[in-house]
Length: 191
Figure 1 (cartoon, rainbow, N blue to C red):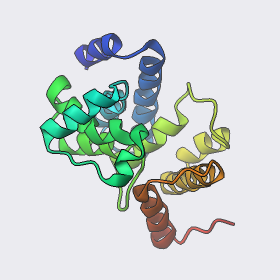
Figure 2 (figure 1 turned 90 degrees about the vertical axis):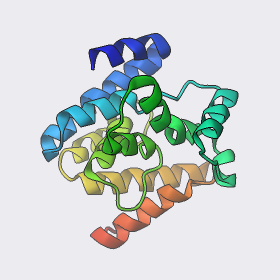
Figure 3 (figure 1 turned 120 degrees about the vertical axis):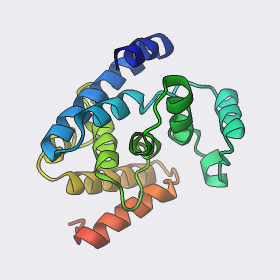
Figure 4 (figure 1 turned 180 degrees about the vertical axis):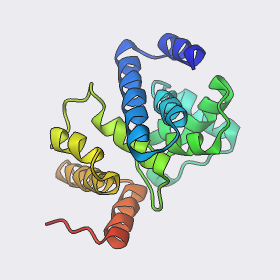
């Protein structure tokens, strides 16, 4: 993992690298709390944004060479491209092949229906890591993450959907599906 840290430090801006370390730290802490693999959580946290700073041309090239086809909705939301191509970059550039880790990287931005424990951990860690300071209800989310991870993911998706609606930005369908899935399965209520 030390070699991956060195590569990331060289390949990411300082702010992005500090964020990455915060996500890795938080993911490891959440893994301890929920009895998941600490190593897998830390590694997925380290690599969750490994493709974040690629420009449009590089991102499209990686997608094309890897057989990834962006949907029309994906094309309209370049801010999530790094999550779509991230597993490819993690595997080819950083040598990670474990499907669970690659899936956590893939879904860390939007979430999805039937998320695994590791996916929920990285999704949440990305939102609450110590360097974050702009999200609404951040202190509450940080507390909630260690009390009830499913409810925390539900609240993060609900807050994200509300925020995007207030900015008149179309939410990713996977985020909406994640929200609805948790609402249905866990019977959560927005009140």
